[in-house]
Amino acid sequence: MSGQQQWTLLAIMALLVLTVTAGEGGKAEKQGKKERKSDCGEWQWSVCVANEGDCGLGTREGTRTGTDCKQTIKTQRCKIPCNWKKQFGGECKYDFQAWGECDMATGKKNRTGVLKRALMDATCPDTVSATKPCGKIPKTKLQDAKKPKREGKKRERTPMD
Image 1 (cartoon, rainbow, N blue to C red):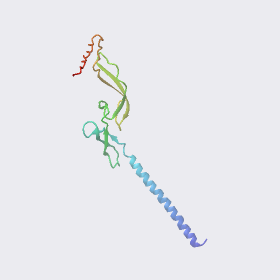
Image 2: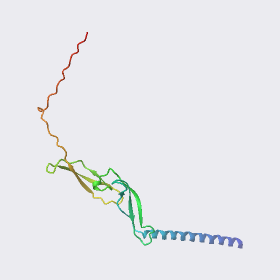
Image 3: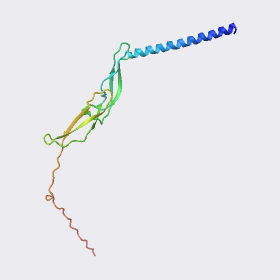
Image 4: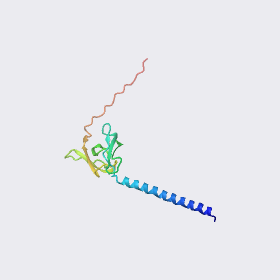
């Protein structure tokens, strides 16, 4: 090998070493950024508040703590389904059993529900119970008390001459 080829080979090796070390340096910076993100706490979300009424589109506010966090408060759009039982919170959905028999002492019947789904970070009880009035109790009618149906009199038509 000539001297010029040796110098060329040496220059190429030097360039390779520089590119490898520069590439590793960039990775170290990225890991440093990831570590800074871990200094921020987890987002804590408030309950969804409807814009109008008690269901539909709304907003929730999130907060987090941390020394190097750029953003500590943010607002997020959310939705409260209108067909959910609001008695148990607009963010909790339950599977309910069939209504039980009427309790004659209280005049009410009840049923229980098991938590099916909760929206976002909602705190929902695992089981809930609901009551409602029994409503009208059908009275048994005696067969003899029914009035007989009237049979209508049919007129026979007589042809007119």
